[in-house]
Length: 573
Image (cartoon, rainbow, N blue to C red):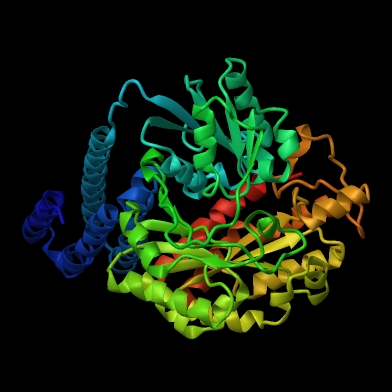
């Protein structure tokens, strides 16, 4: 703790004591407990938490340090003064004068503290910069963003570093300079290169093709990878020179070798490797502005859901890294906040659960002091030993692909596991260990009706869904859903690649079966207004606080709900 930020507090307390003893002796019985006892607590807490959470304060301009005195000091102080001093105008005026001075003192200390933290952060950034050695070939890696369809990236706290490009950087030989242009953090500006690598999700494919054209026009070879290019390699090859299909670890060394020999092929297809001794991403290329660090501990999914492309990309065999390797990598990640990008961190079966317990125990034993969230299947709420150690290790939120509480709808989506488990019991167990439930729900299945949409809303509002994510069913390339809808002419936006921008989980891209499309969109707007109203978000905050008995978990949930509210408002039809 830095004592210089408490000097204003000591000066204020001395000032208050002197003023009270000489000029306000009649009000001493309320001033002393208010300003000499209650005030130092939020002051100390505000300074301490601002330093401990400097990443949040600096990277997303979080206002919590300024709100603390209002929540924990101002409201009870004003109530006390109105109740006990309302009969004496002079005493009330004197009291409120000291109150205003106390706020000015606190805000001054916080402003100075944040200014100093910003200076330290800038110095740290400068110290990490280094000049690339001359004579090396330059690989420019690009993470494009669709500016018209920003989705969750509308909020800085929802942006995550492109882990796949970090893996590519780690696989690239030392004889290359590596530069990342990340549109999450900066608008693309052309930078000369010998070789370019681009990744893209489906909704960002056109932006990736646009950027690729700048380099190809200058005869610089462009390689594209990621899930969209892997699902649509022939399309991608119309816009780039080379496509890497699937996971890159097994094939990237060959790509680089062929490039150096001027023998770059059109297609390279990776195989699914065992994840033992996995390559650790080169995180030095990532922006220091990212609030969350990311890590992957497993790949593949045996479930093969109707609308999901994970199994097409990563395979149906569930592969896991050893928990010791994961712990070693976690120790290297500078951010306090972590997102485990696994589609299901828990996995399937007893061995997978034991591995998860060992991982979470290891985080506690190594005192990693990380705060994190993850994605899992509903069985995350079945094993209390898993939940106990996840909570102790710093888990604050778990993303569950619930999709619906309606058995008929789950059957249509082929969500077999969800049909076997009790939702409410899982939610209670998860909350018990101070973890919030992020429930993901999908609108637009073939069994969807206006009544089922409102049933879904009522279910979300009544049950322990701490954070609400709603999306429109989206037929992404590589899924059985896409193949069926394309085959049966149900896609209403099929002018590819131009229409890929709309395949962003927030746009309706096909004909609804039991509703008119306009009727569905109007109903969805009404559902969203109810789900993401400020009243709903405030009530969810209070309920999460009560159920989890953790203000930190409740604040995580509220912040996440605000992000989803912003996304919902941006997707209004």
